[in-house]
Amino acid sequence: MTNHSETTGPFESNDISGQEPAATSADHATQVTLRTPAELADALPYLLGYRPEDSMVLVALHDHAGRRGRFGGRARLGIPATEEDWEAAARQLARGLVTGSERRGARPERMVAYVCQEPGPGESGRDVKQRLERLAQLMRTECGNLDVPVIEALCISDGRFWSYCCPVKGCCPEDGSPMGLPGTSVLAAAATYAGIQVRGSLRELRARFQPWETTAALEQEIALDAAGMSLVPRLLDETARQEVAEETLDLAERIIRRYGTAAPVSGAHPADVRDDNLLADDEAAALILGLQDRTTRDRAAAWMEGDEAGPALRLWRALARRCVGPYGEHAAAPLTLAGWVAWSMGDELEAREALAMALAADPDYLFARLLHQACNEGLDPEAVRRCLRTESARHTTPGTTKERTDPAPRTALTEPPQPAAPAPAAGIQADDQSAEPGSRTGRQRRRRARNADGDDGRQTARAKGDRQRPADTRPRPSAPRTSRLGTRSPITTRTRAVGPGGA
Image 1 (cartoon, one colour):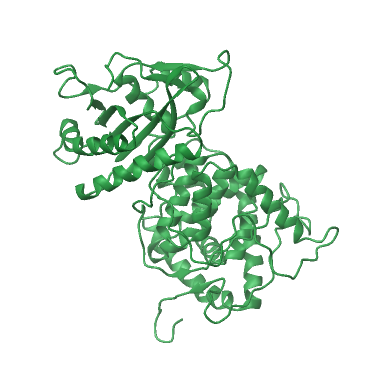
Image 2 (cartoon, rainbow, N blue to C red):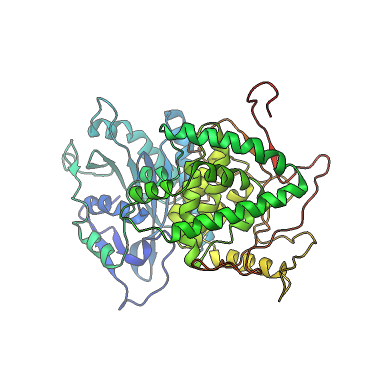
């Protein structure tokens, strides 16, 4: 336990991303030393990259090269709705961060704990502080059981903060201390100088992937029903499925080109509205259903870098927003593609959220699970990109457009045939996110179709601008696969009746 005027540790600008910072010389390292609970409270959005809501957060501190309290890994979980689950959540969070840090070779010496929640109806920030005091104590207890003491525990609510560790009676105001204005602290200035930005709240980030709940959702659902009537029978036919794959990829390529030439707008929400207006309901329906085939989805993952990556990410976001009503499970495919492209572009925060939402839409979606685990463990996405490039080259005969007809070999992220391990915790939002599976996020919807997803993805570059794609540059498909009795075929569908004699 530390005195409130005691230095709690230096904050380094290269440690904000969530990864363990690389070694730098003292002459070139930018440091900000945090000395008070107010500075620790102000640092939280910069440590995570966003403003947490309804969250319990742990931040690891390391003693390194004579410096005490250097920030390390961070982990976050949503606060369980029922108090009976608080103890399990605190144990999951503490063990996940400690074991993840140990796997990286740096066990934390101390922790800083946060509980963040806005007041409910008729509730004040002080009421929130008192209500969450037991949760903060459970977090301290679980860290103590792992021999990692919590030196400060803060509650942040309604623009104010409280300390649960202040040893001096009457030191802290009962109504809490006000948070500083965003962007006015020394830490904010250092983060701005380092080019680091706070992405807003977690709710705002998730809103970019959540399905429509407006009147337009009904028209999109009608378009999905109509597309299902024509595409599902073709997807179940081995020969016709290859034709659907080519049609899906051609359509996706045209829309990516359309997005790439659209006029830029300022702000995330206006940009999403612009992208929604550029995508027709029937186009979105055809793409959503076409991507339920795992080989088509793997080929679509080829748009992962260069000038194509940005427009592709916008398209996958838009398709996730179009998985309305009973088509919620269909969002697993575009959400996984969005997570993969975001991770490939270096945006681990958006990648983790998209992949967690994909697992919430379909917990058995193995491609999302593998990517989620790889991202959480801090793997370099270049290794996956290199795998995809290699697979693409192995399936294309040099100098011709002829494709191999033998089954595609597996890549580093290929789903194994045996039963999968439990999904990673969808709620943890940190670099050390190896905790036990946590609560699922997002809205669950009635399942309309499920695909047995595999990962033998292929990647090549798409022609830029309005030029026609060369014949040998499209990501190549694998040969048609026949399903055997007792195994899952590449796509399994369930359709609802649309009337007498309907499909």
